Length: 409
Image 1 (cartoon, rainbow, N blue to C red):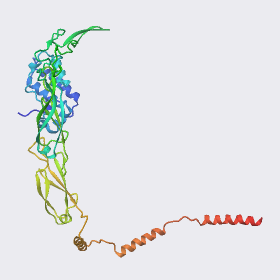
Image 2 (image 1 turned 180 degrees about the horizontal axis):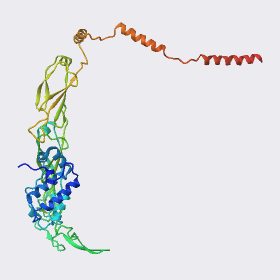
Image 3 (image 1 turned 135 degrees about the vertical axis):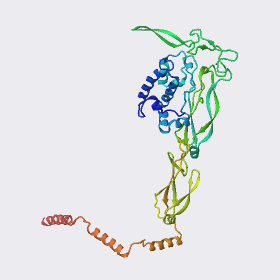
Image 4 (image 1 turned 90 degrees about the vertical axis):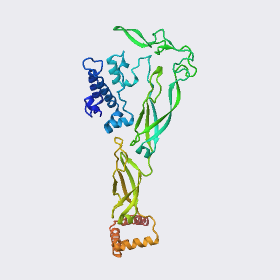
């Protein structure tokens, strides 16, 4: 059965802001939550929660907008709520549950202080080859993560002993505290100072984990990379992160993909680009040739008189589409007419004969040379030189005048 559009489920438009999405979820969640005897609908609430989880996360929302439900499933970003048991939330107020959704803590298990805690998420950078991103691949990775200490089996206590309930909080991990203020007295619930909110006290810590209950362990995972991914794509391995304390669940492992560049191919979405050099003869006469594709060489026809920069399209020879692995993009072959840099004597003679046949002048005629010289002379004659004659005459007259006065004396 196909899933309904998430925007339709939440009753918002595709341009809705995060605040609008939260407001719509809050309004519908109150009506659909199973605890609501009048209008509660567990199935509808799970559908609503799944839609909210996807659209309230910017990265998941972008992925959903581009590729729909298939994109979320392929990346592992769709968690689903089909197996969620509302009985696990017994003892929690309805408002607390809704706020947990809105605050992004739904996946944390709603644990009270002193109870099980979900482990932290981990991130791993995975580099793959260009063609592995196109066709998909399987990789084995090793990560260091926290797991229950094998020596104490996650209790934190030395073998043969076990934690004892805290007498101060009776194992709850929380105590009430009376706070005095200008407005009178109020009661606050705080973490138990005796057990630091753990609910139990370890009298003899485990020598292996020092009472922390967890120890770092190397873990191998097999990662299935779907076809059509690109750099920046994230995969999620559920329960691949650190183990939670006090019997809490594992966090998730997020794998960020980095795709290496290819020496021939350049990818733009689902389209593959490649440059193909051809010679003058092929460009003028046309013909057939083989060009590389991501699946091996393919034949293309070069039309006579093709110009450099022409693009030849190979349909369905591009990348596999992430949203639909049954469809492919195209490959674009960019033709570049290559000019030979060195010619043999025979080749040079042939090109000269071709120029004669095509009446292409390789040198200027005598008439054109004379015209160039004539234009050059006219240009030189029009250059105006500064007239220094007046300055020279004035200077000479001053000298004569000086000697003239001396002779008069």
